Figure 1: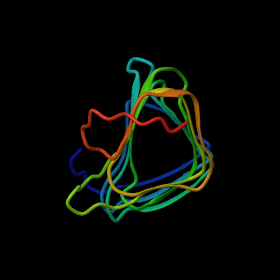
Figure 2 (figure 1 turned 90 degrees about the vertical axis):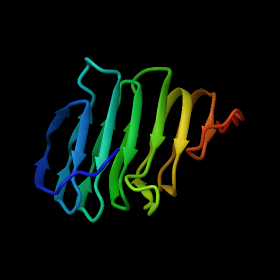
Figure 3 (figure 1 turned 135 degrees about the vertical axis):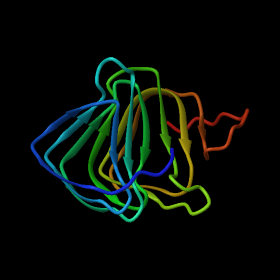
Length: 151
C-alpha cells in the first residue's frame, strides 16, 4: 500500500463517502459516531491507518459496497464493518510486511458471501465475525490453491 505522512482529523457524527479513507503515519485522529462508505462509483473501499498514529474512535461504521482493504497498523478501531453487497473480497493487510502490526477491530465484521478473505499478520476482532453466505477462500495473505470454508 505504501506509506502516507501524518496529519490530524477530528470528526464527530460525519459521513465520509470515498474510495480511500487514509489516516497517515504519526497522525492524531479522532473519529466518533461516523460512517465511512465507498463512493458508489467504485465497488470497494480502502480503510487505512498509518503506523504510530494516535487514534481515538467510537461507534465507527465502515460500510464497503463490496470489497474492503483494511489496515490499522496496530491502532484499535471501535466500531463495526458491514458489507452491503455480494460477492466481495475482504483483505487485512500490512503497511510494512517486514514489520507487521496487528489489525484490530473492537466490534463486529459482518459480510455477505465472500470470494476471498486475505489476512496478513495478526487480526483481532473482539465482536462477532458473521458470514452470511459461503466463503470461497480464506488464507493468510499468501496466494494458494487451497480453499478453506470458515462459515
